[in-house]
Image (tube, rainbow, N blue to C red):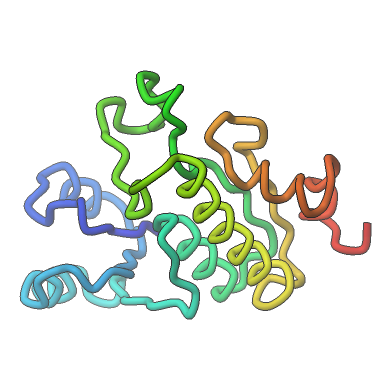
Length: 175
């Protein structure tokens, strides 16, 4: 399954070549696209295309919604990489985006003082983990593959709430 975000161009030749060679299921979860483009894409790829809108929606990116979709589709274990958060000012000159080395930070919370922004991000990550662990994902095992990365706000939030051994709790709620 692939989530096709608003940054992906439907005219991308490599995308269509890939889709012709593979039977990947395609999910669109954003409403920011031209409905005619979506309709044409759906017509071309048929039942492989679906739209999803999760109850969970935040300002911390697409990955939390993808996790929610995976949980709702019945995933038993989810390993998470790339769901980090804001890049602190002292790391701005580093390239932390895994797939696009020149990509600028594009979150919607990067306004004002860094500490205020970090607090807002932390609140959003806390709400996500509360939703996943105590609502839709009670029986799902999670693993934060980004643990310890300087931009991984989940590490900070979960360590602050659950302690240094939070990873064990994500895999087994009875621990």
